[in-house]
Amino acid sequence: MLVDSHCHLDFPDFAEERAAVIARAVAAGVTRMVTISTRVKRFASILEIAESHDEVYCSVGTHPHNAAEEIDITTEELVGLSRHPKVVAIGEAGLDYFYDRAPRDAQAQGFRRHIAAARETGLPLVIHSRDADTDMAAILKDETGKGAFPFILHCFSSGPGLAETGVKLGGYVSFSGILTFKKSEELREIAKSVPRDRLLVETDAPYLAPQPFRGKRNEPAYVAHTARVLGETLGLDAGEIAAITTDNFFRLFKKMPRPNGKGI
Image 1 (tube, rainbow, N blue to C red):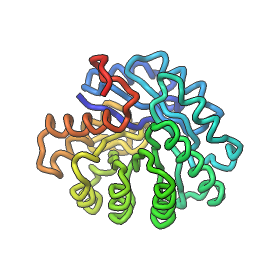
Image 2: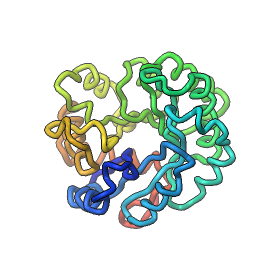
Image 3: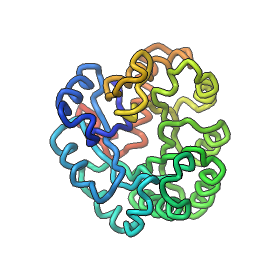
Image 4: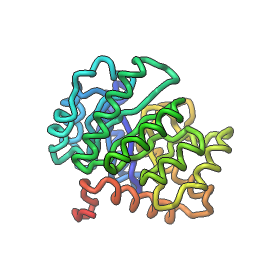
């Protein structure tokens, strides 16, 4: 059993065969998928997908790219929308200084509102961080000082310092198909440094397909390839890494029921 902790099933890439993509994931042993919100103002389309498929749950939040256009989204609104039984996380929110598609102050303001929502609800905050290690670490330390909140550094591609800070503050670290790329030796070394009880895997589909599908559209079924490489990196077999990452997922995403119908 595997879980894809982060995908984007609402994206146009899947519009023509979404049900088939989900079915392929289930056939590959991926029994739970979290489709991640990038715009609160388009949340209804995310929720519709989650409500239509037993295996799919969702988050609610604003990606840092869209922080300026959704600067009016309040913590209270996030908390209210998160009460739906299919919503199991807040985000994705954070900082992206690689593309800088939104002013950095807007990104930070939105990020802190999402942190407040995660703190209030107890739902994990899905954090996007790219080329922003210093500011990200500073905000996480500052906000944790106001009160702990659950979080996951998704699609981790930052430096070892941010991974260490995240773990020290109680966070989890999720690896995507980037981990499987030939030139990702440093990232695999970082994966070795993360405690095993804080590791997760994801696809970030439709992006970042793992080897041997690099360059093609990614989909949740392919999380098995990232899990395999993570296991090899840690000296674990497929069953062991699946058990570890799945148990970690349900410990963090407490609101989501296990496939057998039992919560964690």
